[in-house]
Length: 295
Image (cartoon, rainbow, N blue to C red; front, side, top):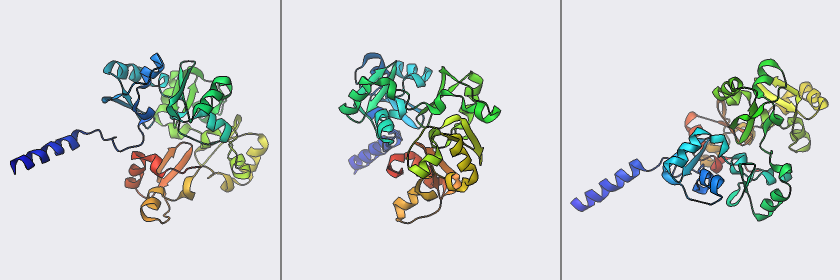
């Protein structure tokens, strides 16, 4: 009896101290240390004792020193496109997870690929794929919203939100963006919603052709597409809403549709997800890949 109680107590302690992310799928790089990979090119498993969260992904590190390096400059170490394959995004218009085994460090940035095929395609033509995660062509989202002005940002003043890079002309704009990134990030990562609806294609918008509608920024590939949107915004403004606005967690649990609410919304990999309650929103955030729409 005493032995059983002791065993139960030990199990309870283990459960209490176990990392809260253990059951999540947001663990980045399959648990490998990003700092070790970029600085040495070697895959080294991280230690659960040394972890940091950035852009909704959890990174593990080989040592406290490596964690300190990451925390001092996260954007220098996180993989491009959140670890998804940039070649798949450019060639197929799809978000496909990359694998740590197929990686390239290019211009001090880490890229992961679906397979050796995509890895070789990148190595043969890196300029075609390297900026697949650059939003608004490097122009400042804060200047677009606050001053209706297209203003180039600087590559060394950068933030990452929803797996995409945003450049800013100064640290002031970066701080404004960081306080509320969802308020400044464009719909569909800056791709044209008219092209998405009419042609089912992801076509990058041109910042000169942008507008604000319903407190959200839309960027269009041409002046004509901007006019089309303005003539019928209801047709295009929801092009990025997943599951037609239904709660994906309720659908997974109950097998039925239930409309989500605007106040329970999450941006994830270029799509907007609405939830029927705060609890279901938190369930999604704990394991987004379990519920996210696959295209």
